[in-house]
Image 1 (cartoon, rainbow over the protein chains, first blue to last red):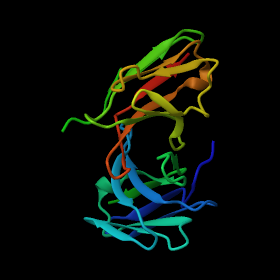
Image 2 (image 1 turned 60 degrees about the vertical axis):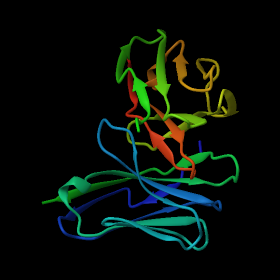
Image 3 (image 1 turned 90 degrees about the vertical axis):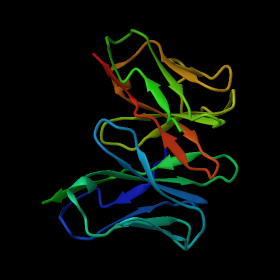
Image 4 (image 1 turned 45 degrees about the vertical axis):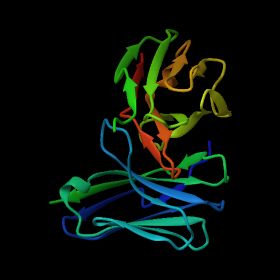
Length: 112
Length: 112
C-alpha cells in the first residue's frame, strides 16, 4: 500500500539539541497527524494539523502543515532522553473518507 | 475517558492455524480502523468501519483475513489460515470528532 516518505529515517542527537523531521507526499492532504510510538506500544497522538500553513505546538513539539499541502514538519526543541522512539506522520487525502496513510517513520535516539 | 482496548496483547501460533483479535473503541467513536504494522514499517490500513458498515477494505487479504463490527461498537479481526508473513502488530484505532485517530496498545502476532 501507499506510504508517505519521512526523512530522516533515523537520527542520533545529543540531549539538549533541537530535532527536525519531515513528511512528504505526492498527493495533496487535508489533515496531518503526528504520532510517537514507543517499543511494544501503540502510536500516541502528538499533534493534529487541519489547515495549510498551520503551526501548532504541544510543549517542546511544534508541527507545521506545509503550504503546498504535500508536506508537514515536526520539530522537537531541547531534546531529552524520553524523546527516544519512532515518530510517524499520517495524512488524509480524500475529504469525507477519513482514510489515513502512514509514513515510514523516523527513529530518534538521544545520547545523554 | 477509557482508551481503545485490544486483546490479546500477544499471540503465538503455528502457520495454518487461526487467530482472532478483539478491539473496543473509545465510547461514542463511530469510525474504527484495523492496521497491520510489520516490524520497522509504518501502520498499513487493513479495514475501516463506519458504525457496523465497511468503508474501505481494499487492502484486506480477503482470502485469509476477515473482520466484523456487528453492533457498531467492538470489532473482531480474524486470520485463517495464518502465514509466516502475517507476523506483525495488529493495531486498532478509533476516530475522534476532529478527525484524529486514537490507537490501542496493539496485538502482537508471531506465526511460527
